[in-house]
Image 1 (spheres, rainbow, N blue to C red):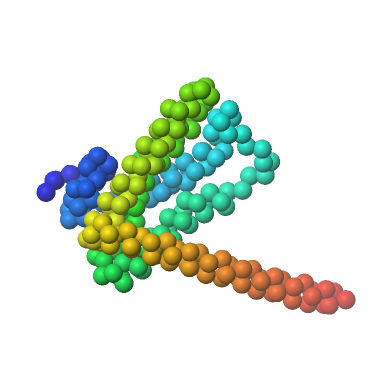
Image 2 (image 1 turned 90 degrees about the horizontal axis):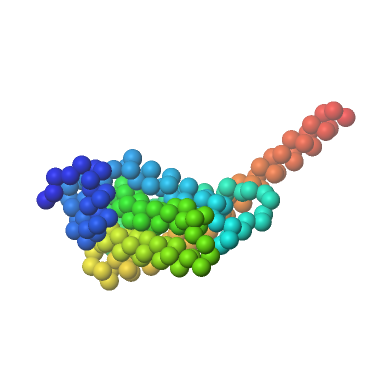
Length: 209
């Protein structure tokens, strides 16, 4: 097996996904620090792509900026996937730990994040007729991420390709269930806070009277 540093493992995984994730697993070469940095860059990429993309391609007209959708599309979706995938892999006797799933998923997102940031920068340099080049970069980055993602999930759980796809399908269903329960819990929590605030307001009013 290769004797690489944690930083070198990132390059190895990106350019040799099929053997790279296997080496990453057996050599324990993954880094949570690098994975967290990639996750933060995903948030920045989502924000930059929506808010700073070239005006000739995408104009932003809303006057009120809301950061919550970007947190949801990056941190919340990512963490929900990690939890759901780990939960489902226990049903399939998968070997991946939550830490390994987190790292492999983050590493697989690197081409998507980089292509999105590069496309955002190029959208200010290229004219509208040259958008095909920007689009090509985005497509290549997304396709590269899909290949890395499938390779990473296959390696981390030691599954066949078909079983990996079945696991991912169940993971999506589990994510929907988790997000639904979270929304339900937040709604209930909001109602409780409103109820407590109403009681406080009523008591304060009566004490003043």
